Image (cartoon, rainbow, N blue to C red):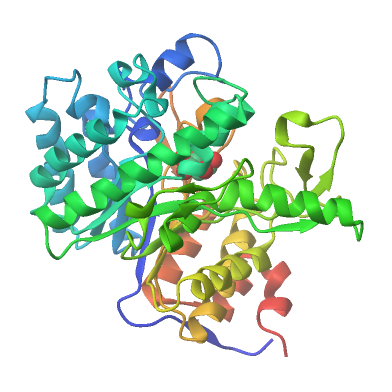
Length: 440
Ligand code: BGC
């Protein structure tokens, strides 16, 4: 194997991503907490990583010592605005302290304003199906950005609006556990409107801000040559991926149920946030009307994660970045999430190295990829899957709060510090892919 290093451009952002409900603990005033108490999840978020009581300090130390120069976290709407007419200044002060914590560690912050959770008062009034959400959300965004603007200029308005809408209103695994494509599309449309309003609000408050959203993008391939499988692939692909991107490109939201004009959405992004985990194989299934007769899975020979939740398909990451750059030429791209569930760290080192390698291929064409945020820093509460899936560079025992470093944390530290991926790193942490990543 030759000795070589795949380097990234100077100033590249390397970090990890987290979300409030998954790490803070005791976020009792949102719909997810309620959903957990109703028994829909595999365990309870409880104290999570206990960040609300200050454990973020030691985890930010870990990240900084491991060479990370950026961090993406989210603020919890239900803490900042616990009731429609109440703002909690102490909560905002805690977020300001976290931002100072990042500044003191020379880490660039990226704040997500909405990551799957809604205050109970919003949920009880119909959540994102209620058209009033657009002004509710905008008001919250104004207040929050105004309070935090001293420390942060990078903003993600909404994380994975497609997953929020589809898991809550088609898959039924997220609250409110509904099964109705029409309602899912209404939710997405309101998320697009709220995003557009927030985009303008943030720019009005902070001229130098850079605002985007984080798209969960799933590349897809048809299972066979059959035209039906191809048709299903295209229906599913558009249904899952395209609502937001189409609205932002053209002002018209594409949906499997028809198109909807949202002209104010056009051009409302300064960067595209991409969350990539895996690629789906899609086929026609008469028994699945709920998902418009489409079904998806992974090939039987795929390199799958512990719970088969993710297949390690690094080329899918390359195709994702290629799609992004062709759809929005010259628009900066941030990889806002990428990672794998793996409690034993059997798969993660090669998953990480192979995905970084694909990102390097993309960067090497001068595609404007500006940073990468690994999901995630420390094991945290994985929504309906609770604690059954472990995505952390550090393992967490939620009972004792003890953190234990996984080998991947060292591999990622080496990548961050070198601003690149070397043959030596691959040889040390995942020799099984050395020949494919560094061919002779
Ligand atoms: C979400 C994260 C989640 C991760 C892994 C993404 O869809 O944004 O909140 O933890 O996937 O499941």
